[in-house]
Length: 230
Image (cartoon, rainbow, N blue to C red; front, side, top):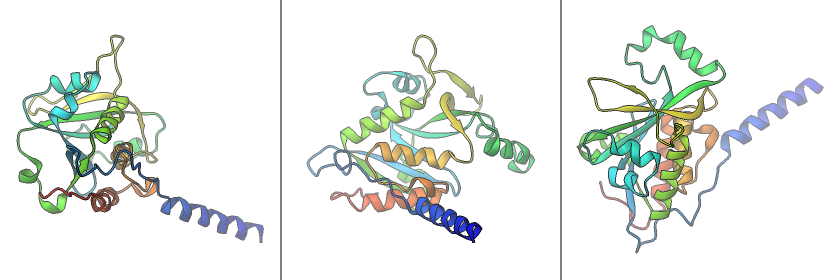
């Protein structure tokens, strides 16, 4: 009998965590109708999420994130992602990297990187409608998003961001991150945390999938009295 109660309690705990919602912050999101909001786009490639943020919004206020952005190739939009410092940046076939994938998921203490990838084309022209979700942030929400991304960046003794990897044939740059990658804190968890920092409600334990993060952004966009038409 005690074993049955323990199993029932464990199932109940898992169910509670799975449905747990971290509330949004009404002071940050949605933007007031009379505010000049900042539109960002959540992007879904089927298993991984990125954010597309206007370059100008990342340049405001100075600091390590603005410095990292200033050093990128031209482009009015910056794709922002996060992942394991090895698996995420390796562009070889996934079928040949299964052992490294298992390492990234289950070995403690994996290093991570923040990706900044400049794009000249507006996200509405480059990404299919079903693969993107527009979210209009308030100025305070954008500042909070900026601060959350910047908090993820490792810096050197002078406070500058540290480049980890740069592929010679594209413009994306990967910067060392302070955060740990593992199965309990994946790329989609990180993106959901950015949205949460900007004031959106999220379900943190369900954010393991890109689809859940997209649903989060879609539901939050319905709270906006002036939704973006893209």
